[in-house]
Length: 565
Image (cartoon, rainbow, N blue to C red):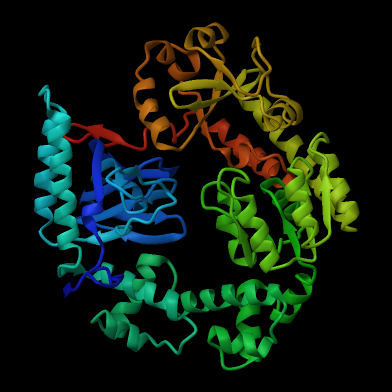
């Protein structure tokens, strides 16, 4: 079923936007095919135009379906990923570009538009006459591959024409299939879950029968409509309960339930405990000021009242406990936004703040004006850090029980690895913007080589950020490599070409398909919770070939058939 709808669900009063104040400069264009784009950070503006297939895209905290004929604008420093179902591929055109603007300065000079400036086009748009986008993209690709002296100038003019077309057609009526309309009802639920919603009213919005609407919703999201509404209400109730200011009967009405008893029944059905019990367990408001502190508190079974939460930098905590943390601090580039975080804590004061000691004196002074602060030394190993935090919180028994359980997991994992890989050497590496680095982080030293007793190949450096050439890597020639590829645009571009290097492909680990993809979360977080997850990931090394070492993107030129994997 197709629905003719106006593309104005997110329309704002923007008739007065001075589009002539923006100048666009295209940096690159590629036609790509992928089954998955893992979470990555952009360092320029990106425009994705979907040619075929469908998937689900997440930008920061917003998730939405991505279908053929959709276009999506991503801003610098935003984090996004794309997932497809059942390994199906999605084919799209990826434009990378920069924007210059003279909006905020006097005179005729233009400045580079960064993440701190607003650009009106953001997120997903569905365009009418999508064939025009494909036509312009094809011409841009042909220019990119030409040898004309003025091709960069022509590409800039043509990209300006493409942007003009998108601007002029961003509110044109488009045909939307049934699943797209169902997604719009899901977004409506997200913003109106506290209201009296019925299957009949939602189905009517989608122009479907209630029975068919319910079946399609369940198929698409693996959850029924009523369960989805209940989940949203309970998650919001969690945050209100953790703040501890409102009465439970008032919270019940705020999230959409008639009385506190009905909320408590639904809360226990979802969480496993009643709403009143949950509030008692969250009585003390403990703020985790950094990533590692979250991992320490989780080992003590304490959910923080405030913590840095981000879909990339703290992806595990974001996925698992973000709804249990009422106050989200910025997690951008490890404490870069500390002034913003202190203001957030000041507006939502906790009972206690726990932090590593290696922060500035200015930060310490400002934190002390908000709540008592407990600092722990970064020179201690993670076990001792956990124990002193536990002692301060009077949770030492909990810490000892956790450490005993961790040790049992260590013994099991250690035995399994020795049984399957013997004395094979493991070398952890990081790849960033075309360079390989030896990864001698504390987690690698203490968990990989310490707890698990994996064999370390001999290297000439113990530095955390030591660059290693392919020639030096050939001399080491480890049996297995753990590779952390930074998920930002420049690095991913350089990784595409790096993989074709003959010295890389001659390495034993590469030839034997024993290069394992790892991520910063948990491998670069120094905490008990992260190290427990490292043990679980280490067991994956027993399965031989790593399934995640394929490129996220397969780049194809306009005159070559797409390559699928």
